[in-house]
Length: 312
Ligand code: AHR
Image 1 (cartoon, rainbow, N blue to C red):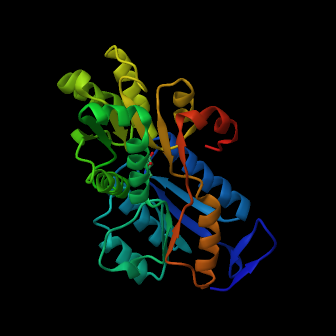
Image 2: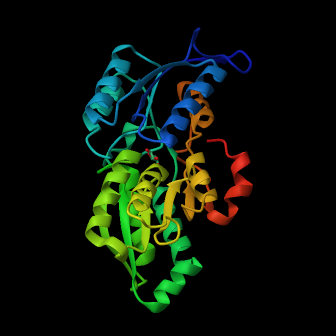
């Protein structure tokens, strides 16, 4: 297709606006809401017609949405796969229809990597490593380790999703050389506040004051767990040290209140890069196979200073 750009704000494929079909995971977290907003805003700014579909955390809904984008003959499809596996048949259908596919945020696990043109998103393994590295260097944790074992409970993300698999992997990779650090319980909280609270309640019932640390695969689950910890009469951020991932505003508020100790950044602001990739892909321009988002780590002591400039 021939692409003609009439200044910023109007992207054309041939003589019509580019149509992008985007299948979103759902609205499970503060991160996801910010990601959806970023994609909608960037599409409007770039003059791209966005067909947006919310899968409510269900793979079958994403597959249906992708099939419907193929039937509507959109110019390009992008999606954030809720889980890593089970995509080959529908991606082959997109390829047969000559519609390019861009992965955003989460990866697909498949031997056939030609089923998508590029993958834009974070390095989730590195996020897990960063959480563990911060933890072993945190003075109150060092003091605990000097006296005995450090008992960790883990709230995992959605079962089978790339961030849940990779954040666990990166965290464990760093802790494997730290014999004093033990993950005593690990269960999914599906990336939601409600589930994070519910599972933390169960952890507290089973392990009580033995729990020294909570590692949550996202801030929303940590925020839900904070409530469970307080209801159990313990002090989040002190009796239970908490590290989570995303760096959403809610996490900064919890850190300012002294209830969360550290958040590892995972940026949801992928919209502008996605639109630029969509334009290049439709124009047949070469794009990198993998674009990794640049991110930082925010311990509690930085929260008050950083909060005013946070964008999500
Ligand atoms: O895929 C990114 C993850 O999904 C975010 O960390 C989490 O908050 C979201 O639901």
